Image 1 (spheres, rainbow, N blue to C red):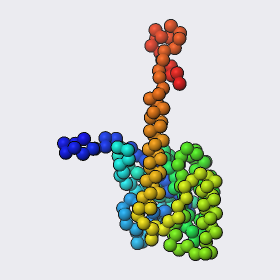
Image 2: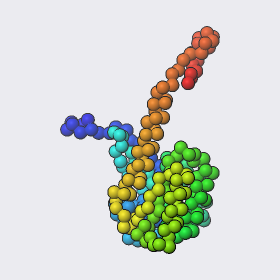
Image 3: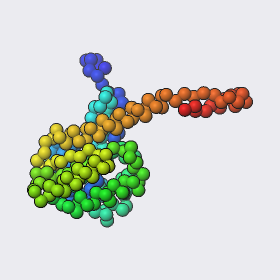
Image 4: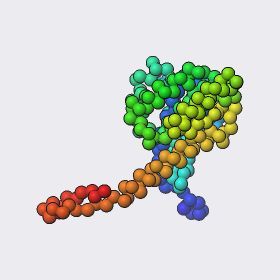
Amino acid sequence: MDSCGFWIPTVCRTCKIIVLGDAGVGKTSLTHLYCTGQFPEKTDSTIGVDFRERLLHVRGDKIKVQLWDTAGQERFRKSMVQHYYRNVHAVVFVYDVTNAASFCSLPLWMEECQQHSLGPDVPRVLVANKADLVTFRVASTIEQARHLAEVHSMPFYLYSAKGGSREQLDTIFNKLVQQISRQRGKEAEAVKSIKLTPKANPEEEKKGKWTCNC
């Protein structure tokens, strides 16, 4: 605590979340709204990587949430894709409910995650963006997206970066951060539970060598 009696988090962790999806699905709008609280009235196509941060307090720790918004066009991504997928803690897949092609591309984005060693333990969510433009014609695609998310054990959100509430968007990202924080807590407990014991060989003990008895 400080001199005024307020609790001050002493640990600052970084949480890297990548946002994947085709060009024009609203990735930049989502990340900008979450980090600044403002919907960008004008956005240009992302070239390379757009990077934004927001600081959260979770379970007594300070969490620096880093949102990596990649260009949807393949020609902009080839030069930086390895760096983009390094040390990722969570993935947000985004598609445009009015653009069926962006939905059909989702399996390709998921496959790319697998190619870069993002295993099933990395939390993922699926966001169907531009909900304010939903019509009867695209409703079936939304149900398909719900099914896709269920098959891959991902939470599914129907959202509008332009007309949706800030609270709903906070829920999408904050739940991811909380899940990551819980995973880290379990990993820390697992490390603490490992006991170091000397080997049975007396000669090895004399040399001061130790082994891990898990």
